[in-house]
Each structure stands twice: as structure tokens, then as C-alpha cells.
Amino acid sequence: MAVPIERKLPDLSKDLIDVLDERFPSRCPDPKDDDRDIWIKTGRRQVVEFLIDVYDEQHTTLITPKD
Image (cartoon, rainbow, N blue to C red):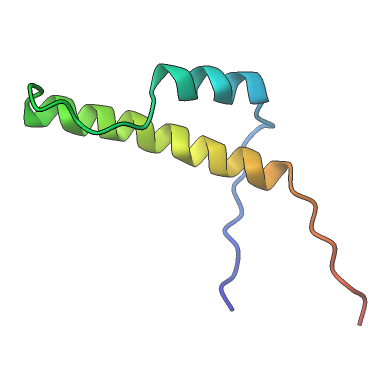
């Protein structure tokens, strides 16, 4: 079983996540973009995906049974 990675970040707001998700949407690269622009856009989106994951972790309640 994998040990969860502890991410020590301040609480994220849903409003922030929504704005970033809208500003940097997940979409296919534009064929007119050069390699550098594609990688920049990909990196931006990866940050948004990371923050969405952190937000989900922060707002998920895990209930574990007692032994």
C-alpha cells in the first residue's frame, strides 16, 4: 500500500480553483503554437491539476475504523 504524500499548503478556495480552471483550461495544443508555447501551456495546466488534487484532498473526509 502506498503511503500518501502530505502536501502542506494553505486551504484552497473553490473560487480560486474555478477561476484558474477557466483561465487555463484543459485542451489540445494549437497546431500553430511552437514547442515552447505548448510546454508553457502544459505547465500552467499541470499546476491547475495539482491544485485541484490538493483541494480535493483538503475537502475529503477519511473515516477509518478502529482496530
